[in-house]
Image (cartoon, rainbow, N blue to C red):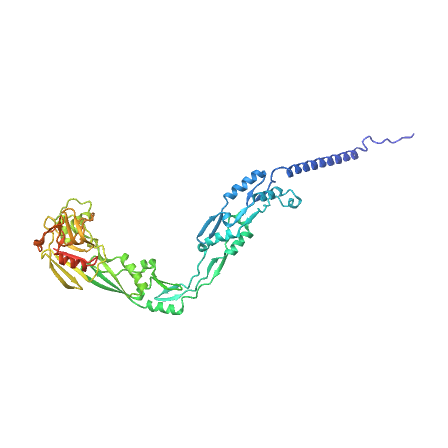
Length: 499
């Protein structure tokens, strides 16, 4: 019995499926490649700048040439470059640095960026360099204007004073802006400058002069060994006092600066306030830093061994006694009573035991008084006595104010000169008028010295009354004596009016 073996119906099925799968992969690949190539062709031939394209930190991705042109132009109009060195900071424009953007050429680069085999391998997120033209002369002109502001001058050796002796610290070199090198930096690195918005400056060191010399240090130390004398003057008491500042007293706050041409002395105000105490003068008196310190600085500068200083007086307090008035209290202290009222603005009525502020008599002495000249007016004697260097040189008859308009006692000074002054309240013209004090502090009206007044330009008044109270508060002298006093007395001359 012959049995013939029959093949299985599915014997060749796996091989057939494998072939079909491969054909499908090939077809898919061809389709994908075709799609990719079509898409790539569409992208390359599109009117848009390719993704990832930028220049100077400005993204142009996906923009048409018109859109990108507007973007570049707008950014260029608002582009600023920051320049800074130490405390100097300024912002400027690219055009001030001589830079001009060629938008058309830059856009041509941007559009073709990534569209050629040469640029395809590095176009993603790789900025393109803009097309920039550079004007060297314009950059040089701008840099010349800022050069003085960024320069750091060479410093000569600083003088250090310690324990009354001067030593010199090493000189410090300076820096000058290298205009040519900085301009070349702009030309070579314009893209980086525009991208970062910063311009690096190039400097050239400058040598410091070899000063101070040893001879200068020796001369400075010789002056540092000197004492200074404060010659103090109290114009109210006509009293002079003296105070000595030893070298260790004043060198603690002195400064000295040396340049190629001079030695300049000064004062370290911080050290002065911390280490220097004005000498005490007692009796309610004091020295004013506002007058001492400028003179002290001048004494150091001029090597003057002596400096003059005025002694001032503090305001005082007064306890009102029974029967006292503003007028009687002002009369007692030599202060015109309106000044006393001004110092106590909230006091309208007086009662026993009340405390009043008596203003400083220095308020009536606003000018620096000369020490060698003094005028004394005696109300009881009706005399004017004139002193020079403590010696009586003239003794003249005079007239002061009538009881209803008295001359105020006190210590005053000559504050003004008028060859002919007019008193409108009394229609008087007064020759050789010298203003001495303001009866009322809030007005410009002054009482002072004058000769025989006239009225209506012809009536000569009070000639027969000299030697008796007759004026409205001024001090009357005859015309010869008033002219002599007018020519002799400088501004600030102390006038003592005794009651």
